[in-house]
Length: 282
Image (cartoon, rainbow, N blue to C red; front, side):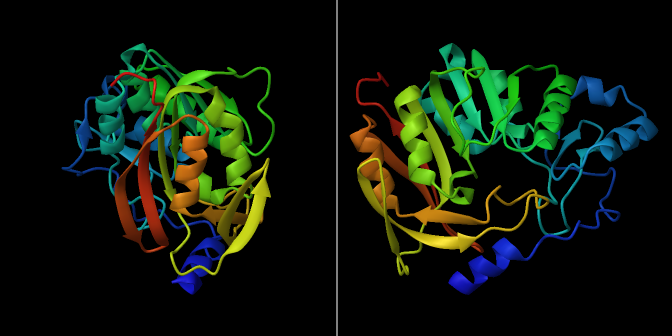
């Protein structure tokens, strides 16, 4: 399994060929997108060519807004809202919440959060992702505050310093210092966290580390390059153990730690966690 994970993380630098991606005819996942539906096929095609899209939505006419990455990755319409956001909203109603989204990617989850939450701040370490997010949500008639920020750096003063809910999907396992990152963000989170991440395989092999007095074990993986939209921004990443994550969250006041999903994906084990502060009403 470890060889498969490493091969996946280092083997997709080349730009994908998306010329065969169908422009229309999609039956599943159709959404009401009035501003997109106003565009002619030619204008929509131009829009889809302006930015390096790697995921897409579908309007009510079955036309693609965005692009797929390859014929086997992000080649299906994305759901809005994603089921994990629906479940988050059941546990912590978002209508009164300020959500901090770590890793907005192309704005698909940002759009769902903007539909549900009182306020959304979205960040990403790649400026092209910030641009795509702004275009995506703008053409969906939605809004969020979007910033380019490498989340392994200190929190900039221009960003909010606290928020109610932390939305953290598909980012943690790309970080070289994931525990230090969480130690920075969790104390700033007033209510709850949605964390979806790959975690260390049970068999290891493990390395040990210490971050601000917290000891933990992890598996070390090589990351790809800045040009790979599905890689981190450093040359390696730590995949931490679920048990260590639970200890960290509990120590920072998130006593309700629910592993809602455990998935054995082609890249390795992955979990979806809802963590809620013990003093936060259900």
